[in-house]
Length: 306
Ligand code: GLU
Image (cartoon, rainbow, N blue to C red; front, side, top):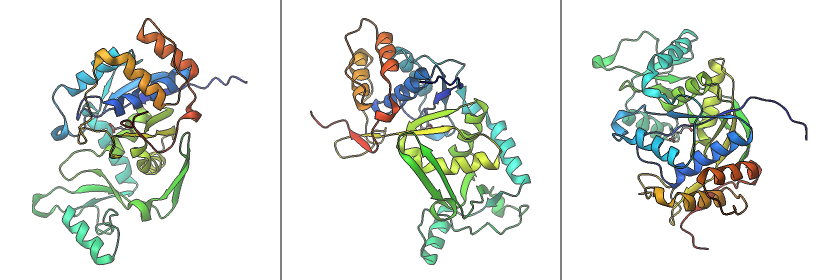
């Protein structure tokens, strides 16, 4: 096999809204193995954009847990809470190109409009799209800023899911980059930071597959490179719900870390790992046997026996 020397920079980007659970460990391990199997770097970014939803101490606890599992990152951890000026600069670039507009709609107004027009309530109907950019705020209320979406298909080839595409105007609608309450939206921050960190490969959960075309379009608007994507199957409970804080995902027991890693390897369709003395040896073994093409599409019920 020809060895192509292509730099690889991957990342794990948890939000500190809770502690790591089996689902987030799965994403961390898969992104780590893919990076190491490519002789690449693996970075960690804490996506602390939404303070009301964050839990005190969760970021530090996440980093400690990654360490305990032998998942070592290669550069200083990046915190999105310290990067607001970069998101502001990106928004200003989009404003200069008239690709964004201020929106004064409340959630209720958006829903009413959708019902009236017989549209999917999740797709923004563009009520404010024609307003002048310098329109004055109503009742001192600051606007949200939305990106104008094109009536065009944005597609890409995912290393796990295969080809995936959306028509952004029809399937998503003009989406928010800066919320009316002043919080930056995930879609903008993730695009700015992936580019700033030089990320070439993104391995993450399939719940974010629907976000990828939005992110690719934003990369195009901001003249940023598009990384390779791989969206992992979701780990679910017996009811088929994605493991999360809301579905009461059990906290990882560090004393069970070898078993937990072996469990994650099985979900990633790795062969059975040999006995080892150190957890690092287990990871080394997994790097040597990692095949992203073996990973399944869809979801994996972790509570199914047998
Ligand atoms: N912060 C996001 C999450 O925890 C992940 C973002 C990403 O991987 O693009 O779900």
